[in-house]
Length: 153
Image (cartoon, rainbow, N blue to C red; front, side, top):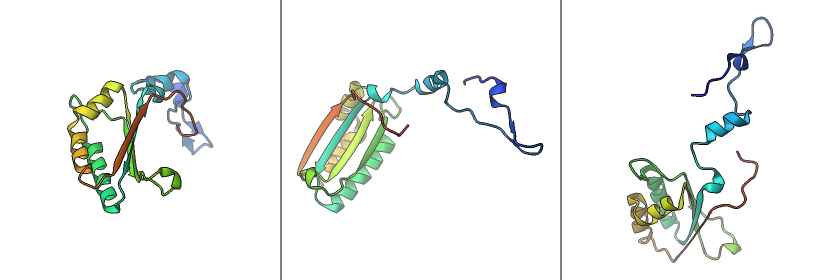
């Protein structure tokens, strides 16, 4: 736990009866670093995008269910290891080249992503179901970002 001098969290008196006690925020760069150092920074993560040509809406719904199960059951050395996962139907667009479903996963390392591909029981189960849904094509790419940014924290 980070120790904070009490003078930083003293109640702010608006009048004699009303006081607001501020909560600790991460405005101090040193505290922000300590709070975020437990997980890999976005640029250090392996980002993996997989796109499916899965024309049936029923198949897409079943694949969403499988990604939900994957999110809840992924495990390596007894604990969850996928840093983030997002999956869903692609928005209709002429540029999608027939890909109708997209998933994005983030891993702390290339080793974790390789475990996901080759050994993760939750991912193996997802793949087994996915290929019974009439998948007509799959494209997977992964990368470590050279540029990160935007307005989201």
